[in-house]
Image (cartoon, rainbow over all chains, first blue to last red; front, side):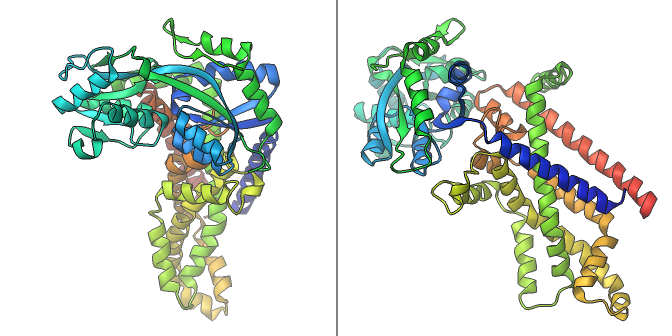
Length: 274
Length: 234
């Protein structure tokens, strides 16, 4: 076999691969832009096989922050968005990119922090907890990535009457990263951080961290699902996307969400109104 | 230190258990990076040879540009290819975003300058040595480039391996254009990034050990192949 022959053969192999890859792309699927919290908490790995079996439609999930996921859908690169930032979702619909927002489920945010709790932030009141962290200038890690969790964090600071722009100092670390990476940073710095409970429960590298604030009604975190507007992007798989949304809000989908548990603890609470 | 030992054990366990999902991820990584390497050799090697033997205005500028592009940040390449392939982009109609093909395109863009620049270096040395000979035979520059490429085929192996190494190790570009979709575009590096995000550091490191082992094995095979070919045809 000459070198030229080797080149020919590998070219053939590579063409064959691209062909297989494109055939693979022919399967029936929808693309869902979602958040790192749903992916990294393991919810999708639990949820999607049930839908795929029932409907025969594969769901390809691209997990990003809520802001990025909505942007991806604005460009027409997703059929459905499944995110958690009501204000941003309503803006998305008002701009004409989405058809309709439907509520699917909620989970809650928790403040994670060092078990020794140097800021004495432990309690049930999120705003009080944040005020104590700021007063103690205890290290706090922020997502800083325009995600739903980041948006929620900024809302809480504002509600606590703390003007971050003025109070931001060395103690406030803006990391611009996803939930997991931000938790890794917090674990290595022994810092406080706002996290969604799902990702925290599924997170392994906890170091000295534990839950500091939980149970406040304001920590409620609502997830919504939206079909990308086919008027805006003609190639959106309207029928299949709608099937996925319909399944999520019916009894089957809602039950599958409720069934997802880590260590006996339920992560997401279905609350679709239909 | 205990973590590193654990990861090594975990890596051995995963390999011996023959996890089919892990095998699929490794296979996809190899298929994508092999394809990208092949295409970039087909583009970059002739280009590098022409840069070495050609005499045209702007040649030096091109040489510097290709040398510089060897340092292209993968994230930037990913972003560029994303914007091109996105539905709102100029190539959006083909629906290539979030497919292995998109990942091949991104890696090809990333490593073609590496292959071209290294080829130029190799061929330039050859050119210096054989210029008079080729000229006396009346070979045109294109003809000379072809002859020199053939002559240097064994040395060019290293250029291809350098490109492959860069392709299989990068995460920034494939993450953006592939989307790290489970079972479709999830490769070794994006899996490692995901497991790191989940805080499962031992698993992430174990996957890293497997990736490095695979890359080493491929380099060993390439080296052996080169030796064998050189003995036979060299």
